[in-house]
Amino acid sequence: QVQVVESGGGLVHPGGSLRLSCAASVSISSFARMGWYRQPPGKQRELVAEITSSGSTKYTEYPDSVKGRFTISRDNAKNTMYLQMDALKPADTAVYYCNAIRGGYPPFWGQGTQVTVSS
Image 1: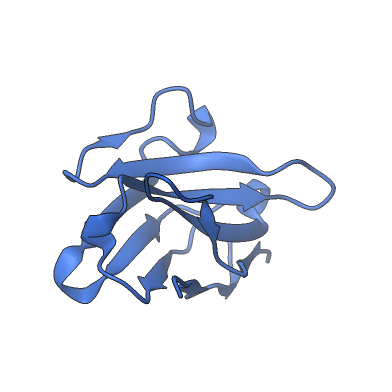
Image 2: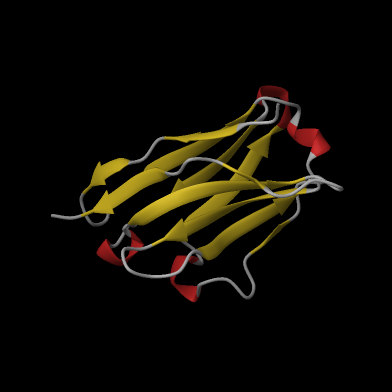
């Protein structure tokens, strides 16, 4: 059974940093792409960043507010994807979800990890 599990969320002051992790129960090389989504309170879930199996990243079309502050990466040897978040703002407060896409299967989602940016 394929599972993806997020960790690394928490409470941080504005300007601080967090690194989220998404650990998969299978080789992440089997996923065509993986991504981070977030859902702020009372709002819809939105894509933050995405990375392909080749390691290509793209930020275009995603929230301008995270460009230059968030970095997505993956470590195939550890079957883990990361989201480095720097210069955090209160507007970044949300539940962050890991998503993984494998051909022929519905998208895999984690349970989410809460990120709260507050002074």
